[in-house]
Length: 178
Image (cartoon, rainbow, N blue to C red; front, side, top):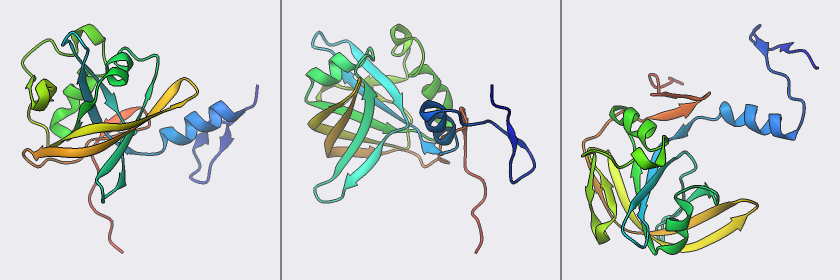
């Protein structure tokens, strides 16, 4: 088994031994914003999941993307619907991020959401949300890239950003000066 090596900062760094470890170790060091995507199944059951893969694709028309595993419990709803709501989370929503990444049968137990546009689950007290019409689902291996065109949205109370980095939720530090 390879041994860890001393890094530039003097600390011990994990050793990359193959493509999977290279991928996992590198992306753990890539901070990402935290979002929640919600939808409904054909019978009306709310579904949702925490996502760190949200990205803007274009401003005109307003397009965004997110990725998800096609084995996810939320995939059948996303695959079979025309719209989703994307919620951007802030620091005060950390518990909400945990809830929506926890057991799927507990994600919508409670009063942290209400029916929103098109009857989709709208999470309460988030800094921003967007209603997206799905324009494409691109299968890639056991996953999918979902492209949505933003049709509506709303702003809540501003908050510090919620980031996911090194398997931990955190907020950014003070701005860097040049």
